[in-house]
Length: 136
Image (tube, rainbow, N blue to C red; front, side, top):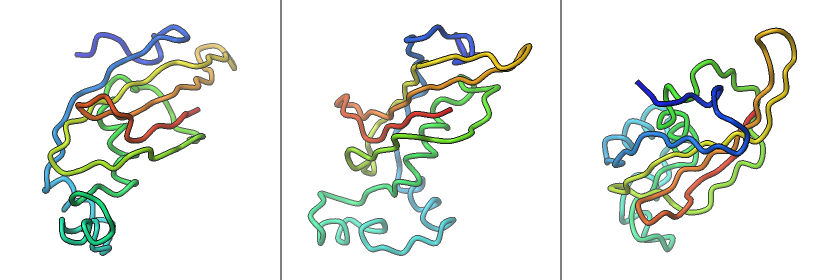
């Protein structure tokens, strides 16, 4: 059970998601499902050929990972759109990551319904932001 869901948070409050170590299996599954064949996504050698230290995750994986790490904390939200999406650094195999979400704005629409704008980011164990965005 989670301590607090984003819908219950106050404006400016930060909710921490789960922590996860990214494995080769995670990336293999993603690349197979999306039929991604770029060498830098499939092997360390391919990544080194373009100047990266080792195999990295595709941006689509990183985006989905944010939602997965936040899990039940974002229950009850309907995703209308993402603004200000930015990949800031690569996510590598064996990185340990955690997601954070912060309420930016709440706007009631009708009884029991409203719009919630929230920012999110995924950070590695060195506290470096890898990907971030803002959702409504």
